[in-house]
Amino acid sequence: MSSTLSALPGAYDLVLKGARVIDPATGTDGVLDVAVADGKIAALGPDLPCPSGATCLDLTGAIVTPGLIDTHAHIYEHVTGDFGLNADLVGVRGGVTTVVDQGGPSALTFNGFRQFIVEPSQSRVLCFISSYLAGGLLGHRYVDLYGPSGINVAAIVKTARENPELIKGIKAHAEPGGFSRWGLEALKLAKQASRELGLPVYVHLGTLWPQKEGTTVDPRSIIEQVVPLLDAGDVLAHPFTRYPSGFVNEDGTIHPLVHEALAKGVTIDVGRGAHFSFDNARAVLAAGILPNTLGADLHGYNIKFPDGGRWYRGMFTDTAEMEPPEDASLPFSTPYGVHHAMSELMALGVTLPQVVAMATSNAAKLLRMEGQIGALKPGMDADISVFRVLQGEWTLRDSNGQEVVANQLLHPDRVVRAGRVINVDSPLLPDLAQLAA
Image (cartoon, rainbow, N blue to C red; front, side, top):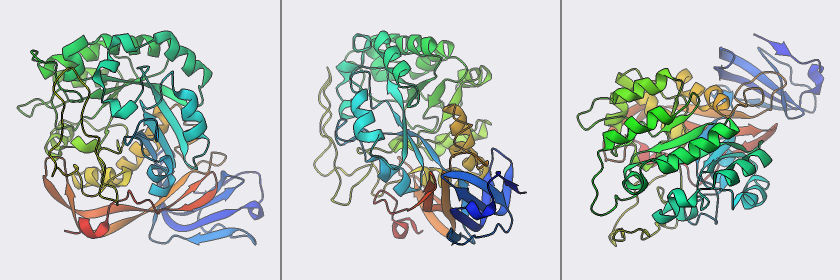
C-alpha cells in the first residue's frame, strides 16, 4: 500500500522506517514506512526514500500507530490541586499525543485552562467541560458543590460555543453519593446543555462520593434511570469498575439496560482509573461488550510520585470526613496509563488491533476529529505513537489486588507530535522491573 501527496519525496522532513504500522481507520496492518512533511502525514508505503536532510528513524520491531488519544485524563494542573497532573507527563512524554481532560475546567475556570494548560503543552489538549461551575476543584472532593444548584446550563452553553476547538463534550456523574442527595437532576441539566450544543455527555458510573447519611441507594436503580436520558453518542464510563452502579451486578450478571444503551448508540469508555476490576472486565467482555474508547483516568490521587506520593486527606461532605489511615498506601505503587490499560485488555483476550482502534480511530470519532487525528492518511496531522510489544511474563494488578500474568506488555518508545519527534521519559510510566512476574 502506498499513497503520496503532490509534494515530491524530497520534501519529506521525517521518515519512520521498518515498523509494523497499525491504522484501523484505513485497515492498514503491515510493515511499512511513514513519511512526514510540514507537520503532516506525507506518504505511507514500503521502502520510502530518505531524502538528504530528512530525519530517518529505523523502527524495526516497533509498532507505529496514529497518535494515541487518552479520552479520560485529569490535567488541570494546580487549579484542581494534587488531582491534576502535568499534561505532557500524561501526554507526549508518556507516549500519547492527545489528552482529553474530563471535567477539570468549568465555565468559570475555562480561560485559565486554555492559557495555562492548553497553550503551553506540547501535547494536544482538549476537554469535556465540567457540568458544574466548580469544575474539578480538589478532584470533586467538596460534594456539596456538585448538586443542581452548582450547575448553570446557560454558562456551559456559552463557554462551549466560544471554544468549540477545545470543548468536545460535557462531563457528568451518575453514582450513589450524588444520587442519594439529588437523584438525577444534575445529570438532567447536563443533558439539557448537551442537547442545546449537540455535544455528547460523558457519564461517570461507580461510586465517587459517600452516600448521604440515613439513605440507602440500590445501585441498579441508577443505571435504570440513566439510560433513558441518554442519546446516541453519549458515553458511559468505567464499565469495569469494582464499585456498585456500574455495568456488573452483585451476582456477576450484566445489567440489561447496558444492552439497551448500546442499541441506541451510546458508547463506552474504559476510564481505567484506580477502581479497575479484572473480574468485572471479564464479565463485561464475556457478554460481548467491547468498549469503544480507552481513557486511562490517570490523576494525582491514584498514582505514587517519586517523592513518596500525595493523597488529599479528607473529604468535605455532609457526612463524616473520610481520612485514610496514617500508613495507607496509594492504590498503586506504580502508575499506569493508556499503554498499560491496552495491555490489560490484551491479557483478557482483546487483540492488539482492537485496542489500537479504541485509542485512535474510535477516539477521534468520539471527538468528531476523524479528519484531523486518529489515522495516518496523507494530509492529516502528523501525530504518531511508537511503542514496543515486550514479550515475557508481566504481573498486572487490579484495584482489588487480583493479579494476572500477561505474556505481552505494551511500552511506549516515542511520539511524533505535529511532525516533531519527542522521546518518552515520563516519571509516571510504570517501572518495568516491578511488573516483571
